Image (tube, rainbow, N blue to C red):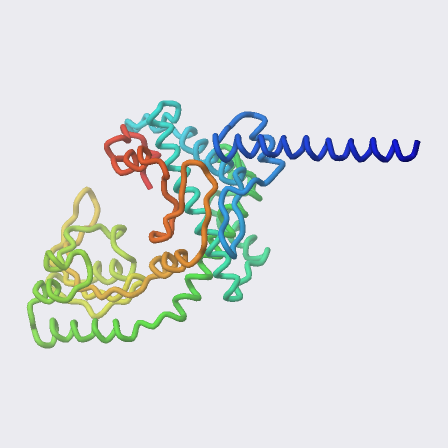
Length: 347
């Protein structure tokens, strides 16, 4: 009798294991091959953290995390009243669904970037404490007016709790800020500084033509136009350049200005007021330094990334996720034509 009972128990256990295996296999096929969004699959994703992205050394990103973030962004756009400015968001159409997939791709890339930033920061000894998070949240609360207003807006716009905000926004921002500061303290810009100083001497001390020097030696896109940046408001200029340019006289050439992008020498050509805003017409000689964004992009290429999502693949050369589907890639390429006044396509 005891032997028969043991056999029955063993058969029951084996049957249960086989049933669970079949269930998990069915769910995995529904998720990975068909990208199913059925109620059962969504429920399973909440319970079981099926991996959607694997980042070697930095961990996994689950299907549920991605879908929650996509839902939050979708809720944000659909909760806005864009009709007042003659625009609308409609993700229910065929093109709207494609635009939502583009937002999903942007979200995936941002989540991968956040994971890698956190890993790089921790390897440099960066620690984000609860106190740091609390202070950042307190700053956000002061911008919104009060805690209740922030909590209410998070729920209304994104369907988030305050804890969601801390984990999805505050901590990633703190890690990125700390890593950028660490990078800035280590980057060597001595050679670029010397080049900028030499170009400044040519234009100011040796009285050589500013536009010609810019055309020959500037590293910015404006070099082909003799460094001409056109008309700009203060908000359109990187802060150190804006601060200097709006205190200059027409025809004046600045000293070498350092910014997060590199070294700038600017010449003020004209001033005007348009629609109540001060505007400056500038020329620039620019010497590029390695920016945090450049450095991070190269670092991301060093990480092995595997994407299990059906419509996406990892581009190792670019260090980012891209569409595996050629039709979606073509749609994204012509997004401005396909936007139909949809504000969700704007960065």
